[in-house]
Image (tube, rainbow, N blue to C red; front, side, top):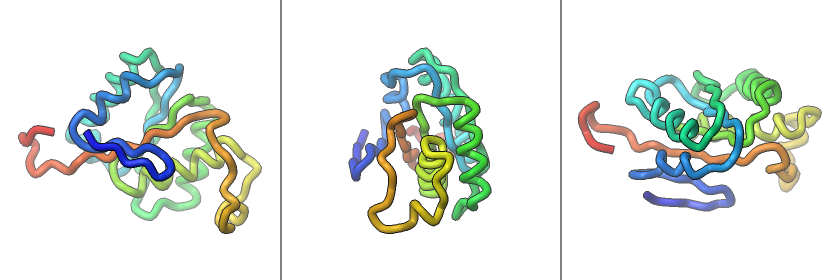
Amino acid sequence: MGRFTLPRDLYHGKGSLAELKNLKGKKAILVLGGGSMKKFGFVDKAVGYLKEAGMEVRLFENVEPDPSVETVMNGAEAMREFGPDWIIAMGGGSPIDAAKAMWVFYEYPDTTFEEIIQPFSFPTLRTKARSRPLRVPRRKSPHSPL
């Protein structure tokens, strides 16, 4: 398993999903893209590990490439309704980027996009939730080992 920190942890490769069972909290939301994570069974594994950690889990699915403002705001609203302790993005850059933006609007619902795009204006986070992006390697075939 590899770990890349800049400034948040990014877990990738073999063993990265199993790290989810070590998280502490009551609720987690998984932010997902178009469906490959489900198709290859990674979502089921992630949900299983989170439940093993004692968490209630919700999914926010179908984050499109180059996520729209509407998707980000819908995700933030889903987070405000659910109240997760953990925000976990699975897949590629779009779900990860969308989850980070959703996290801002989850914690600061009165913030505007204009406020957060100003250099060095990003608010301090981790008052309501922690984030864990996961990059799952693409499989060459459905039968290749992870």
